[in-house]
Image 1 (cartoon, helix red, strand yellow):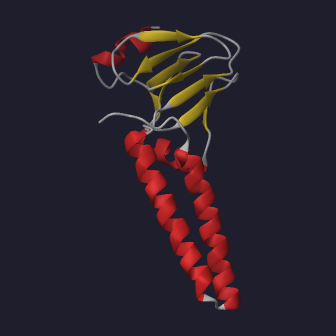
Image 2 (spheres, rainbow, N blue to C red; image 1 turned 45 degrees about the horizontal axis):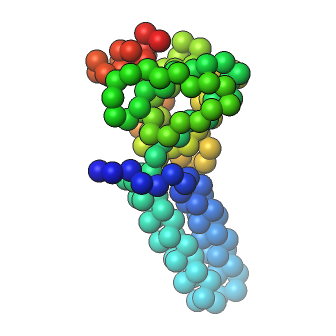
Length: 149
């Protein structure tokens, strides 16, 4: 499946969820159906954004460590250097200070100076906690080069 979305739609899901909750609270307080319709529309748009980002979104890492880090692309097995201040799309994993992280599809993250990876949105954090995170061993031989970098 071809990835084609470079924007962080997981952040849009966060916004749509907040709007939906606020409109639900307004519906309970005012008993106006238009608030309920708005909440439903926000929930639907958030759901569409969630699915679109998961299926078609490019994973992205920004290097704010101050040092060179290594990344593994979605396609291929090479460990590629990423200079400080640089960013790269279409990554599957990143190695920072001897820790290897799997980045879930579509997540946008920052490699921080303390050697951790911070995912930029709440929805992205949830998705990455389920389908990504720290790896203690290579899931397959294609990850070997990143682990050795």
